[in-house]
Length: 133
Ligand SMILES: [Zn+2]
Ligand SMILES: [Zn+2]
Image 1 (tube, rainbow, N blue to C red):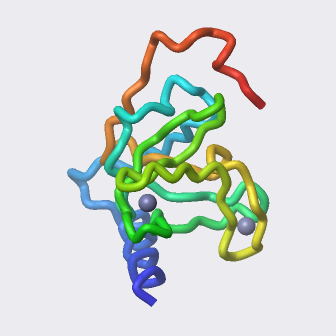
Image 2 (image 1 turned 90 degrees about the vertical axis):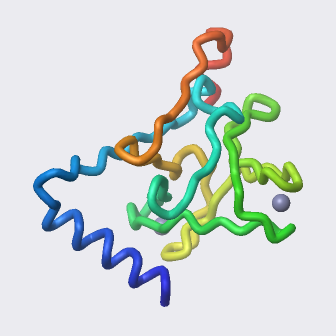
């Protein structure tokens, strides 16, 4: 229930933005491994979200690890983008849409709000690692 309320609030703010507030600017790091490094951490319901690659429905970033942790950073174990638990290092490589049930690579659904989060980009990633899919 908390999720629906928060989502409604986000939708409202999108329809009637305050004059001084910049519009949300959602960016998808995708499978560009230059973004999938622990420098990028501290994701929450305000600065990130999931958008299902199949049904396009949006979900709040409310990941809770099986260890109980909810602090995450980006990683790229074995060249595969993943969202990693800061407490137990468990790496999530896939994400399932709560609406349609589609399981997908997590990088296909993960978005960051650039008006609330500064995404760090590493420039020293070997070229051959840029495209993995
Ligand atoms: Zn954990
Ligand atoms: Zn879906």
